[in-house]
Length: 278
Image (cartoon, rainbow, N blue to C red; front, side, top):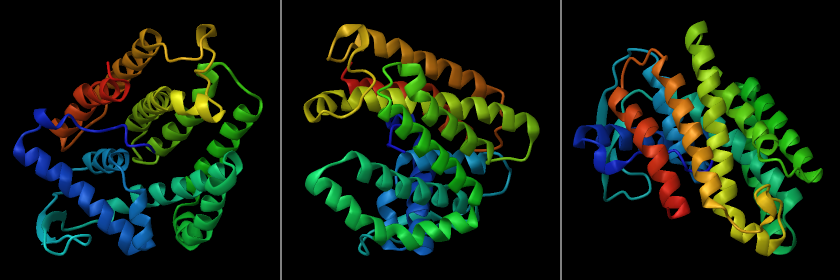
């Protein structure tokens, strides 16, 4: 994912921010322990959101412990005492990173392409481990990349169609977070909308660079213009956020509600306004 699902930090209470940061740091530790030190490069607040949502679906107590930071031994951070529930989000991060590398190899040219080709074997064994543990995640990511590559090869200029693979990918990943059938349907809808939000915002944020580099971007020719039309994009993102909130409100959240409320009601809008400088 792209780091677009972030909390609006000024609106979090101190204890809520400490828990939010603890999940982030714990996910970093889990990635390093399960997939090696380079796997920490996959860490983003998107996966922190996924982890918190996953944990919020049960009432298991979350205890924190203070330990030295792996990246900075002179600093102490709060970590989850039990990181069992971080295994799935960590595997999702690893698998999606690997397929992103494969996608970039096919998209990039010159030194950038060479860099991704060199990176592929560095993450190969970690990817295989994650895919073996979570074959369903591997299939979701594989289908997503194949569908996205086909749309880009065909030169799809319809934003709705272009966003569909990312939306479907997130929809299916969110469904893996629970066995409860009602919550699963709500998460399917929520994940779909989050996926659309991520794709549209990423396309908008990258439009200028994509135009310069001649890369695919479905926003290039909307309304016959090769520049970002913020008046068009902002309502689309606000619609995704509003519909995400509707699905989220139906889910049986058992903990972290104040933090998740912040992420859904404040963080999504705060992030896109900062990214698009609105």
